[in-house]
Length: 142
Image (cartoon, rainbow, N blue to C red; front, side, top):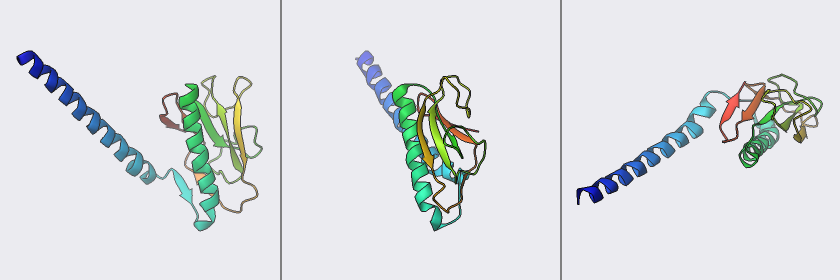
């Protein structure tokens, strides 16, 4: 009888640990990341550019998980290379980061998306030169 009780207690403990882990993860994701100032906005004129960037960040994360490899999104003024700038109002690119050289697109990498934001008048900045998603979806900033 004590063996069955032990198994039930282990399952119960694992379930509690899982619930605590999920709650902590959600807390960090929804409350901590916005408060560290990942996005800088200049008002309502940034709504369109901000929404596009948000959609492309989600796209990059999804691609990293599906492809099981790092995916990087960085600011780009020409749609082909990273500009190494915190100002993203000119546009950005999303690419596979197979060579593990974050923030640089090379011949081994595949360009997945290029977004030209030049037609917008909004100023949009991120407190990072690039955002990189690892194969498990975890975010990495520079």
